[in-house]
Structures are given as structure tokens and as C-alpha cells.
Amino acid sequence: MPALAARSERPSVDDSGARPVRRTRWRHVAAAGPIIAVVTAQPDPDLATLIVSPLASRIRDERARRRVIRTATEALRQRGHPEVVVVETGDSEGIRQAAEAAVRDASSVVTIAGGDGTIRDAAGALAGTGVAVGIVPCGTGNLYAAAIGVPRNVDAAVAALATGVPRRLDAGEVRLGVPEPEGGPGAAAPQPGPMPFMVACGTGFDARVISATSREMKRRYGVAAYFLAASTLLEHLKPRPTVLTIDGVRTELESVVVLVANCGEAIPGVLGPRLPIRPDDGLLHVFVLPRGGILHGIRGALELMTAAAAGFSPSGAAVRLAGVQVRVEVTPAGPTEVDGDPFPAGSMDALVHPGALAVLLP
Image (cartoon, rainbow, N blue to C red; front, side, top):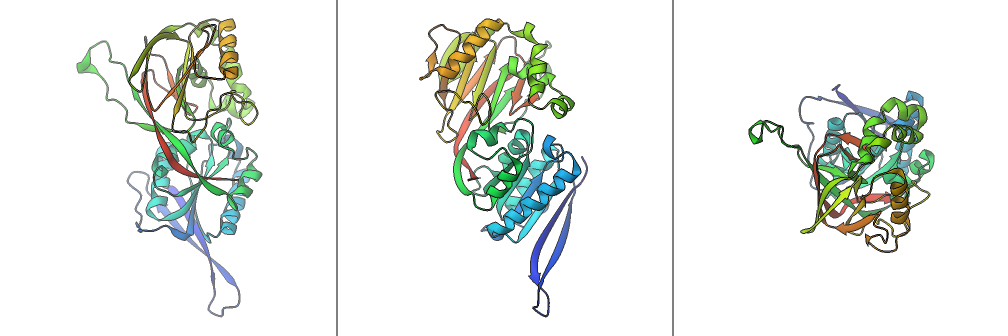
């Protein structure tokens, strides 16, 4: 992973006191080790951090990215933070390290310019800290921004940074369990640690679609890339034995898709379920399509969208449940996804952290 480069600019007054002078301080952060930062007891009201992912589809072009950096920096200064540290990195570990450094440096606001994956990677370090989080949606889907009320338009989202009000929202956490190989427990691979999620994690058909949708497809076709990938995977619409354990209550059924959602909408910013998935209700919402085939899938999706209450739909083509702790086991295990990024096959153990993030909203 290449070294990160961070810069901060603080307006000051020259010796004559005549006019402001812009002093720039560069910090080079080694990727191989922890970021070295000074920890202060209280947030510095003058300091803000802007984390920018150059891999996000809307700002992959350098000119577009420079414009977002310039306008977001101006908005943060208008908010009252004269010193803005800018960190550019598209690497998950680099994003996490940048967010951790911002907390240690006592930034009052950390703004994230990227997609859902960038927000997820930073959120793990920011959750529970009380640091205000700004969001500039620059990815393909931008599901989290749409679900919580951040403008999906980049310029509008940047403008909202100057006047946004912090609102406490929930954050999810999931641990993926890797199945034991044929060699038995002695040959088992190390289990991955827990990771945050802001929108949803899931297994089944949706995870297969995400895994089949390349970065190049998303760059070329936008959201339509997911539908193109889905059209090639219809043979996988077959139910598998599934066990859900929600707050200690075990339910056995079959599934084509299992989605554990912290928030979200069917069509971002346009259409959500009749029974909303609130990002501040302290619950995870579990959506299941238990029947295979295209027609059953369409019927189940419509029933999930129109249901006024949780439970099994009248036809049995859809299930919606809710809880604080959720375990999902599918046999055989299928691929998983977390906030739109693909992960290997395995079980899922998810829980919610109520009010963990203070997000700036218009």
C-alpha cells in the first residue's frame, strides 16, 4: 500500500497583521506501521479532517476529485474549522488509519468523500468517539447517504457540510465465520475479526451479484451494472437450508437471499419499504426471500416492500424480522457481502450499536 499524504492548511496573520497568510503543513504517513499522532483530551474546534477515496467512481477523475477537495475544505472552514487535514487513500486499511489518526489528533469533524465501502472503513474508527462525521457521497450506489438523508448530489452534500447538524445514528458490526475445510478443525483457517457495516450485510443471491460486478462495470454502467450482473446469475435463485438466530430465538427455513440491514431503501433516495428501516431505531432488520425462481423472487420482493408489519408474508414468499443480535447460517455457506463489497462464503454474526455515530445532516 502506498504511503498516505496528508496536508493541513490554517489561515494565519503575517507579522504586519495586514492580511491572512495560508501556511501549509504536510504529513507523510507510513503505510507499514501505525500512524503517529498526538492525542489530546478534548476535540480541537479549529481542526477538521477530510478523507478522500480516489477509487470512488464519481471522483476517480483527478479534476473532479480536486474540485471536491477544494469545495469541501471551503465548506468546513465556513463551519468554523480553519485547519483542514486532507488524506487521500482508497485502501481499506489506509482509510481506517486515517480515521484513527483524526480521532487522536482531536479533529472536531471527520468528513468522508467516497462510497459506501469508504464510509464503512472509516466508521469503525469513528463509532463511539463523539466526533461529528460529514459525508460526501462519491461512489456508485451511495446507499447510506440516501438512507439517512444526505443529498446524493455531490455539490449539495458539500454545501450541507457548512450547516449540518449532528444526529446520532446506529452502526452495525458483523463477524464472518469461515467454514471448516475438509481437513477438519485442525486445518481451519483463521477466523476474520469483526467489521463495521452501515447499510447491510448479506448472503445469497445479492452477494453473488455484488461479487460478479467488477469495478470497471460500475465505472462504465453505474447502478445498471448490478442488474447486468444479476441477469447472468439467475440459475442461483435456488433456496438453501437456513438457520436464523435473532436475540436467542432460532428459526429454521430456506433462503435465496438473507439481508441484515441497519438502514436502506429499495431505490436509493426514491423508494423504500412501507415499514421503514430507521437508522436510529437500535435494531437490525432481517429480510429473507425463502423461495427460488424469478416469479417467487419478484413476489417476495413486492411483499417485503408493501408489508405493514414484520413477520412472514401471507404467501410465504417473504420474511421480515428484527432484533439486536442476528446469526445467519446457510448450508452450504454462500458468498457474503458487507456494504456492497464482496467477501468469502461463511456464516454471519451481526449486532447493532445504537447511536454510535454522530452524522452531520441537513
